[in-house]
Length: 457
Image (cartoon, rainbow, N blue to C red; front, side, top):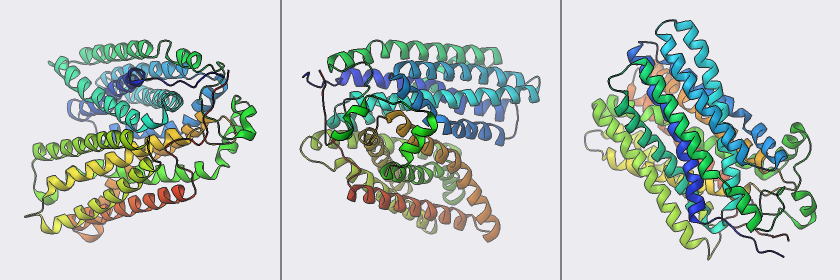
């Protein structure tokens, strides 16, 4: 019998570089092109908003990509292929934006195709990367691994925005397309180098056959099925959706991410309309929130790695606590407007970011532990379902949050009541998510360390 082996910190950082590459391309399409369409081309803001929503909704295809990687029993080709599709979509989106300056209709049609490709690329690469991460990372390191990889993705946002922004001046459309192409090429190259021999080395080090992508076994009586992911896609979906813990966790992901994403487009306008902050001040407030998210992620990484080796429950406690903390702080924001003269808004937003980061990275770590629980090897499909729930929630969250503000403001005639009621609704969603997470824990569906590990000669 060969001893099960996992990748070390270097391997985790290598997988994090793939997240960095993904973030580098995405930030060009969701941020830079957004600004160019609205400012330079004077197009309605709903256009880039709808394109970004499309890139989320197409990710309902995540389970299909996961099934493909299950059937092929390798994740690396799907990750590289996804990044390639994402990069191509990013370049086409830049071309479409340039075309809009000449022909709005032609540019919009090309942009629709480009953002469909972007969504598919994110879905394929993101889903399969998470499954590979779950399979190759030691259970006690999963919280830290989730924090590292997501921090590196955010770093990809920041570095690309800074460097590409510097090279975009003086602005021209040919320069925009060229820089988009360079970013895509660098991202694809970095992904290929980061993944080179990583999956093969893990399989060989574990003494496992190449057909088995994970060392985790769901149960003794199904070990014979664990190395197979056969059957059609419909059969795989039906099989996974029959699992109670998969459905419940999908509901938790959807509700919590709906609350999380809804605040993104609401917080800065709230600070300006209710607290009288300037655009620069509200942008700094947004930066404070993101800084809190990073702090929360790092907190889970440190606490999780220190304690998971000695006891279970760290990730699920962080998941529940992060949701409850987010709920409480959103309620605080709901009442903050009534005391705008002396309310510590920046401190409240910082703590909200910390709570968001704690719950988010704990949820990702729990995903990595849950993905191999089931009576057949359907890791990719299972992760794809949760990824699709997250993507749909993100697509709906921004639309629902801003629409709710407009509707309540129209009906009540009060900006303060509008934002306060939206914050209360988000708080209720987070509280509901905490209840779902606690229910998962009571039923034993969430474990920081899988109950059974095996290694096959």
